[in-house]
Image 1 (tube, rainbow, N blue to C red):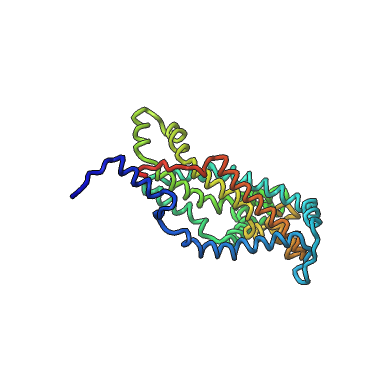
Image 2 (tube, rainbow, N blue to C red; image 1 turned 135 degrees about the vertical axis):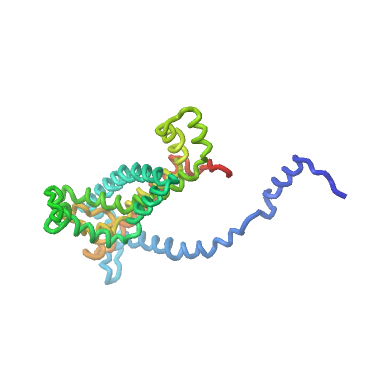
Length: 311
């Protein structure tokens, strides 16, 4: 004999499944155990080791000697490290100011369904396929004042010493870094734009909204969380630039492009001061975490709800 069930009873039944003491739906939290174990062994434990080493004096060969807070004071007051901090801030801010709008516009353009846009999307994506070392070597050759692109084309202003000039080197690094990573962020925006319901654009078109109005009143608001994610990756990623700059300029000329990751490497493996290099590493981790958490809290991305059609 069947018993009729009211909607209220069904609601109470569904809510009761998630009540305390009842079996929760979905996979067990213990399934995350292996991943958490690997993360702890290969991320948390080495990080704690670096924190401890930042209070030691060690040349990488002998036994570490406790130095206490002296390492921190010596590092944070070092003019070379202070200059590296300043260059890192400049590169991070300038990189975001350049990459964010370019990536957004390219992503919106690539989201179109026309075939020629698909072909251009493949071309735009190519820089992401090249290794950082290959990109750096190619640009060193192209920007060489003696036999580079400027000499080959006979363009005098291209023949200047772009990498050897302390006033130009950092901006060359900014351009090469942006050229390498804009395709990745454009891909994020392309995916975000394609998830926006078409009905929103159709309704705006019926109301007489132009393309610019649709972009500012529909596309940008709907890409809010994509912008937050992309910006976080850009800014935090700029704290880890090493290989490309190391091959392209080596931190020179002088210390004109010696940002914190490169300063950490040169201090540890060229000056054999592992304690000081560990201090720089801890500073990089702390700044990266602070920026990431700050961006998410400021934007409200930790409380994001899906605005996509069908969800």
